[in-house]
Image 1 (cartoon, rainbow, N blue to C red):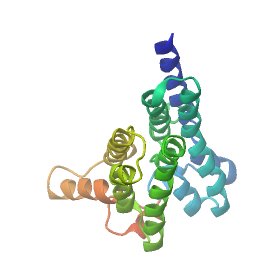
Image 2: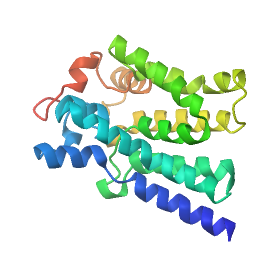
Image 3: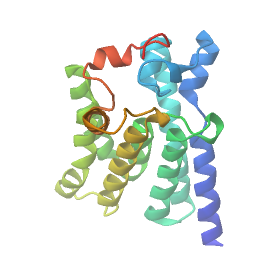
Length: 222
């Protein structure tokens, strides 16, 4: 019975996570496919850049809730921290690879915040701190990885829950996988250009050097 509950919760979390909030905001407010703009990911940051700045708040909160709800529900059902983490990450996977959007979705940062709000609230503040630093410097991509990767150290310092190192590793791997996959954006032919693009995707979540040019791209630009 417990295994069935856990399985149903994880599948349900993936489906809830697949609700493409940013994409729907673009369609409803401007009739646009947000996957054709900026980074090509229908995320809160692209909603901010290309749809409406005020809309980033409801989109971001909904994306956080998509992961927080199944994480919290697993704990309420006494399924344990492991299942709670799996359910939250399933929602993040749904957000990143949504079944309702041909598996072309966002980057999962809001979902990570939702998981941490339930399992390690102080970790939410830790990650938000790194995101704020990145925002102030004009590019949060590297700082996101640093924040996620250092979560176990911070958890150890404040005596956080034992599940944090596993959560941190899973979040980093999901982030890197999404950056490399990049909603199936084509790579250059084999050679130095491909290696350069892959490295930029891993570290900076983009294919070109300029962050501003990348996030402001339109369908008329390559």
